Amino acid sequence: MRSDGVGAGGRKTPGETLGDLERTRLADLLVRVATQQDRTAYAELFGYYAPRVKSYLLRLGADNSLAEEIAQDVMVSVWRKAAQFDRAQASVSTWIFRIARNRRIDVFRRTRRPELDPEEPMILPSGVEAPDAGIDAMETETRVRAAMLGLPEEQLLLIRLAFYEGLSHREIAEKLDVPLGTVKSRIRLAFLKMKTKLGDD
Amino acid sequence: MDEPTRAALASGRVDPSVGLFLDTLTAMRGISDPVGEAIAGAALESEAPASMSPNALDMAFAAIERGAHEPKPQLVYPELAGTPPVLQKAMLAAEAGHGWSFYGPGISRLPLRLGGKAKAEILRIDPGVAVPWHSHKGCELTLCLFGEYTDRDVAYGPGDFTLADASIRHQPRAHDAGPVYAFAVTDAGLRFEGFLGALQKILGL
Image 1 (cartoon, rainbow over the protein chains, first blue to last red):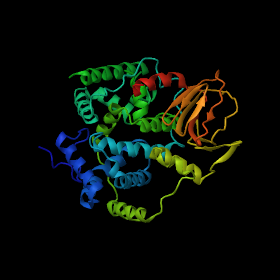
Image 2 (tube, helix red, strand yellow):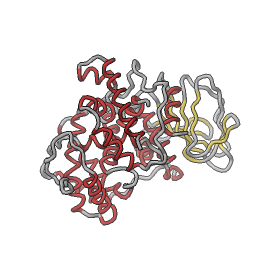
Image 3 (tube, rainbow over the protein chains, first blue to last red):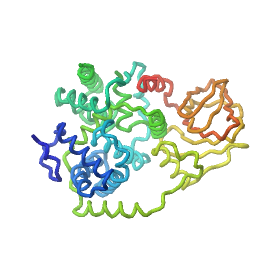
Image 4 (cartoon, rainbow over the protein chains, first blue to last red):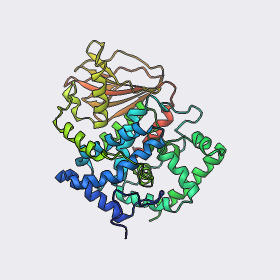
C-alpha cells in the first residue's frame, strides 16, 4: 500500500497518479487545515502540491521565478480557501488545479493565447453530454481515473495536452509534429473510449 | 461528446471574458463539469515535482500571517458581495483601476478589461430605470447577478441568463423594488451561438 507515499520527496515516477487511499489522506489533511489551522498538515500538502503546481506553470511557459511565485500564491490560497473545500465534490488535486488554473488565467491572460483560434471554433454543433447528475463528483473522479488508466500512453498524452495544458488540436499537432487530422481522430478515439468507461456501471 | 468544448473549459483556454461568465454562471447555479476537471486534477498529480526554493514553505506561512491582518477590500456596492468569489475578484480589480462610470441616466457600468476578444462589464441599473432600446453589433450574453428586470416581456432574476444576437433590439427595465446588477459579455466575432447550445447541454439546462 502506498498510503504514506505523499511526503515532500519526489519518489513517484512521473506519470503516476495517486491511489484512493492517498487521495483520501490528502483530503483529510486539507480538512485539518480548514478546521484546525493545522500547520503540519498544511506543510505536507505544500510539499506535495507546490512542486507540482510549479511544474504545471513551467509547462505553460512561465519562467522559473514566475512559476515559483505563482505556485506560492496558489498554496497561500489553499490555506485561505481551505474552508471552501468539499471532499464530496472534488479531490484535493482537482480543487487545487482549479485554483492554479484560475490564478494562471489572471496572470497569463495578457500575454498568452487570449483568443480562440478562429480556424478551430471551440464549439462544435455536436452535443456535449451533461454529466450524470445522479453520480456524485467523487465517483466521477474515480471513474475518470480508471478510464485514463485504460488509455494507451499516446492517447493519454493527447487528453492531457487538451484538458490540462489547454492546447487546441492545432497546437497539439504542431507540438507533436503530427497531422491535424491524426490529432483529431486520436483524441476522438480516446474520448470515445473514456466515454464508454464512464458509461459503464 | 464534444471534447474540444470540455477541454477548453477545464483547462482555461476559453476567452477570459467568456470563461469568467461561465465560471460565474456555474457557481451561481451550483453546477460544474467534473469530468474535464478531474482529468486535469489527475494530470497535476502525474507532474514531476519541480524544485521549490528551500524557504518556500516559510514564505508561504509568512504570507498567510500577513494576509490574516490585512483588511479585506470591499466592493463599492454591497449587493454584489454575494456573487461568486471569482467574479468578486475581477470586480475588485476593476474598481481599484478605472472604476464605475456613468452610462446613462440611472445606469452605470464597470468594464472588467480581462483581455481577449470579448468584452465583459457589470451594469448597474437603478430601480425602475429602463436601458434605452438598443441592439448589438455582435452577440451579447447577459447574466442577472442581483435584482430583477423585465426584457421583451420576460422577467429575469439572479442566475438567469440570455443570449441576444445582432438582430434583437431590446430594452431591459429594472423592477421598482431595487437596483439590478447584470454581467454582460459582448463578442467580437466569437461564435456564441454554438457556444450557448453546447453550454446548455453541459449544464443540463
